[in-house]
Length: 80
Image (cartoon, rainbow, N blue to C red; front, side, top):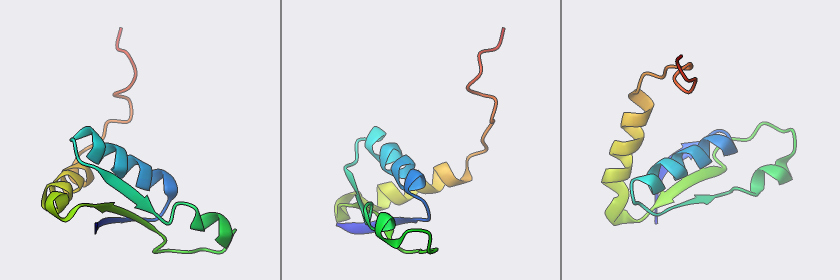
């Protein structure tokens, strides 16, 4: 497995994992349960999204496209 993304928050790690899985890639989050042990101390570098080495380049491209996308915060609402 190879590190493809380092998240600051658990929700962010799950978003990336889900994004990759929707593209057919298998992803794993390492450090998911370590944040509970840290408590309120600010910690970084704990949450790592991992993919296989063969999927690494495709995963990086997917994450880059997601990161560069322009988001419309009202897009989820139905227009009438």
